[in-house]
Amino acid sequence: MSVCTTHTTTSGLIMRLTSAGRIGAVLRNNAGRSNTKLHLTGATYGVRSLTSGTYRVPKAFNEPNLHFEPNSPEREHLAKALKTLRSQLPKQVPAIGGRDAKVDSSKPLTPTHLPAEHAKTFSEYGSASEADVKRSIETALAAKQEWQDMPFHDRASIFLRAAELVTGKYRFELLAATMLGQGKNAWQAEIDAAAELADFFRYNVSFAQEIYDKQPTVNSPGHHGRTDWRPLEGFVYAVSPFNFTAIGGNLVSAPALMGNVVIWKPAPMTAYASQLVHNILLEAGLPEGVIQLVNGDAPTITKAVYDHPEFSALSFIGSSDVFRELYAKAAQGVGEKKYRDLPRMVGETSGKNFHLVHPSADIAEAARHTIRAAYEYAGQKCSACSRIYLPESQAQLFFSEMKKELARVKVGPPEDFTAFTGPVIDRKAFERVSKAIDAANADPRLETIVGGTYDGSVGYYISPTLYATTDDAHPIFDTEFFGPLLAAHVYPDAGFDAVLAQIDRQGGGFALTGNIFANDQRAIRKAENRLRYAAGNFYVNCKITAAVIGQQTFGGSRASGTCDKAGSVGLLQRFVAPRTLKEEYNKMGDVLYPSNY
Ligand SMILES: NC(=O)c1ccc[n+]([C@@H]2O[C@H](COP(=O)([O-])OP(=O)(O)OC[C@H]3O[C@@H](n4cnc5c(N)ncnc54)[C@H](O)[C@@H]3O)[C@@H](O)[C@H]2O)c1
Ligand SMILES: N[C@@H](CCC=O)C(=O)O
Image 1 (cartoon, protein in one colour):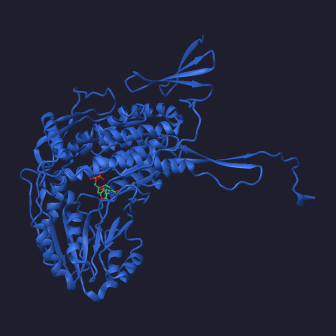
Image 2 (tube, protein in one colour; image 1 turned 30 degrees about the vertical axis):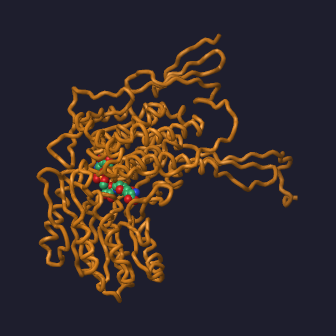
């Protein structure tokens, strides 16, 4: 029989000491409800493994895509899921996520609208106050010890189970949420909210295994060196953008898998889709406090996070300006010695991505790739093509191929399966892009090849637009519009070397994605060499969007980000603080060295 005494720690962790020296702990969440029970032995917290073996995680694989052809069963399932979701709108999303989280109806909720139909409210989300965020941080920190002590195989199991939930039970719900809430068509939602999300969960598990496997291989006789891949102390702040449901999933799963706890602030337009992802992780067995989903005003949430001494890393994806602001604030805090650690800044941001067409290229193929890269999802992928460089001899052919193919492209709402592309995300985006179009239409240096129109009466629609110019210094090549707006520079065929220098120089300081279309291998080699720092992802004879997890790691440098590469070991590595261990098996015997005699 063991006797229990109970102690409450400042972090809200209640520990029971038993006469047998075992510690039982009950974690409490914000509301003070007990939600997790565990038994701990001696001074060790967490769930111990009582089985033996160095387990290997299953090999990761890319989720096979569904294609939604007419009359396919998946198209039918998805149409049904869309209809169901529509009938439930607006979806209410609590300020703080969690298994039993409820919307506080005494507080105002913020609406989001369907990008394709702005008169209709899609979600209404609650806003966390500074005090709510502080409590969430404490809840996360209280969950940390148990989480980081959980054997890796068990942590991995949770994310592998989540991948199965994403691709099975919740696939169509996730797709419908991403389609209606973020304005993606079926295919764009499929490659994001089903495939990429599951791929991140599965591949991150393999990347984590790779990290843990990295151990010293050279040991002097009688010595043994090891690496303890510690999670960071404190907590990680993850801030995700509107345009990919999967990105939020990666921003939280990468640090969490390595034993960290995370405060997750998703973009408002993904409040509902992010809640689904969070709930999937909880259903897969993620302990409640490990990822704290917090909605609301970005500066308020950020203030609470940045005021906390245990803020240890920012994991950000979004625009360059916001990242710079968050980076600068963190640096200020570092200067003021606000934090125990030197918080890691991990961020992927904006792009001004290019296609380069060489005179030797297959022009019709280059045009098809360009349409997908520039106009899919209304040009709202960070990787989207927004500047293209065309040789004078091929420019007219390229333009006529673009016109021919674009005549087949339909712009419409996500529920119309025949629509190739849809609206931009919200009024702010619509105003930004339509203003740029007005300016371009009135600019005598630019020739309108296609598009140049917009219609915001029902949804935020901008027609796929292409301008051409011979002005090699036009500011249109330096601004990220984040819409279906492409600008072409027509260069003299003999000026290939000069255009390489121009591409490297232009792009608003960003360096995310770029490519070359060419059949001349010497041109490909030259472009690969000269544009080495102009893009973090450089492609040859294919479009610059749609990197596949496990195949093309993703991320840029210069102003585009810290280039830690989503979908790689590199990203996970940012969320560990390795400890070096060395053990000697021999006795020293003598303090003096032979040379001292
Ligand atoms: N490089 C990549 O991998 C990648 C991927 C997706 C999107 N992006 C970029 O993201 C941008 C589009 O996404 P967006 O419109 O959601 O970006 P955004 O910068 O407006 O918002 C990103 C996130 O930051 C939050 N945020 C905004 N202001 C903030 C502040 N002052 N303090 C704290 N948080 C704040 C937002 O609420 C959101 O959660 C584009 O620039 C695109 O290129 C980059
Ligand atoms: N990784 C995606 C882009 C993500 C940003 O929006 C791509 O490669 O197209």
